[in-house]
Length: 365
Image (cartoon, rainbow, N blue to C red; front, side, top):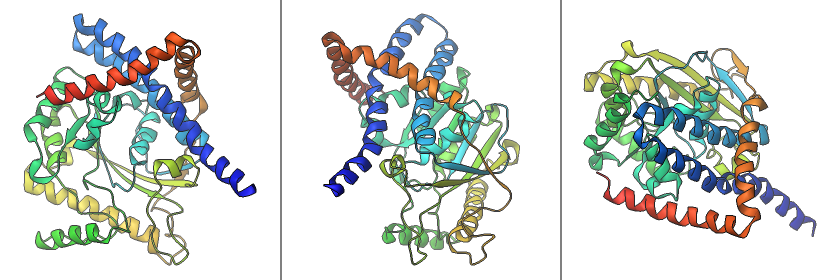
């Protein structure tokens, strides 16, 4: 009985926030849909302005659970600019919680509404979310030879021409680094050897097509590239070997006590546009990440182990930035669930929103 209680309590740590985050999605999509219809007669910049504000509300609610609820400690190395900028965010990729890290940094810059993602193509089929991410300016891409350069170029140009602020999140590795997937790591290292590139140990060899295209297309409107390196504390086993980073469920179950984030702002003027030079630049950045991560996980020097170089500062998220959004979305959702008609509307939003999203994904160019 005691074991059952422990298991039940542990599962509630995940199901409580997950239910609220998923449960508020229909109310959010309804609110966005009304605005989308009203904005059809307005200039695009007005639509994007309120869309970014709505997105800020939802993602701030998400951060309430991933930061304030879990109590995770965020340690930042480097100085995040106080003012909003048009940027591309490049980071190492380890787990499904990585996209939350981009939100964590963006909200500290009051730019969370401007966050847009370059996502793998399969995620566009997520009910409600996949369709909305695309509407918000996200770009779905396929890997390697299937990469659709024209589609990504068209999407980025449509965003820049209407003046939409940009905080474009890209994970250049293309897939997650998992120390248990030895074949993925080996293939990545063999590719680096064939191409005459340095072999990386704690990241995968970065792919450059999407990143180069984004920098090239948006160069005139960008201020900088944010080079971000992330390490999740508690990912070493008893023998000192690196373990997989926490999943979203494990994160919400409070299994990650601390996240270390190294932040480096690179002025856009210092980034080469010529494809081969950009490729070398990108790999050099990942070599620096790999050295920091090697020290973080393997160094015998206590001043380097489980920390990044430089001064790390604890950066708590003020409840005033996240709790109001959780209350607003909860207030919109609760009336829908208290009445029979409201529950019908709630279910229909999930069903029709999903069907319309899938239809749009199939017929859009």
